[in-house]
Length: 257
Image 1: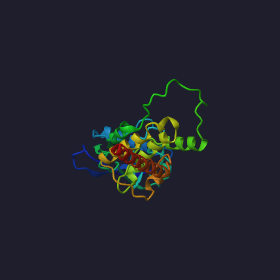
Image 2: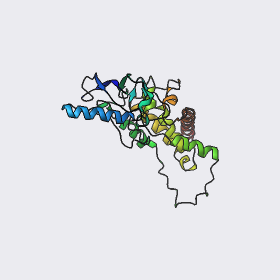
Image 3: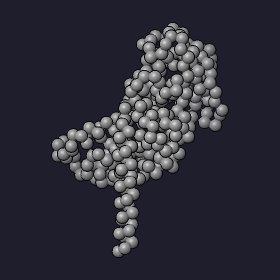
Image 4: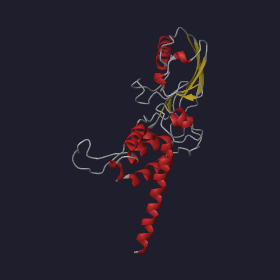
């Protein structure tokens, strides 16, 4: 298969970027998208030119590092896959493929197609964990959890933090990511002790880092490689509102004592 690639090239976050065109021939339809880019980079090295910088790690759809915006879609034209799981048979021979980095103020370009996603790490550091002392390790069935809650928690925990939700949203909102991280802990007994502080801290950090507001269009859910449901956003909003109301009640009660 032969392709024309229009790839975003940018030296660093402050440099002015532009699209560069590359021709690639003889690509197997069973090659992954990243393997195709590897071939392009081999050609670049042979020519003595700079290879195209892009992020990757596991190449198994687990780490979320392979964050590319391909022909106007995060992770490309397939559904429920990451870029490393996208195969060239999803394109037609002779296609022109446009490849860009994630576009978000909170994800500045490092170089070419690689962006700095430390913003997600900072949100997790703000409260996406359990620090309450729960004592020794209990037996597996000692804490009874309704199956529906356990299933919903596991579904939310499937989020790999790739940022496709941010890239898909016209406001570059991180609501689906934050909601998934809030939900998978809020649904479990172990996460209840810090639930109020957690949701307020994570939402505050999300806003501080410059992510946009939720558009309510569902684009994040549609493009999520792990198919995280926007039901989690509704749950996070309930958690956040409940925390705010609780804080106001405590303030009124404390002021009147």
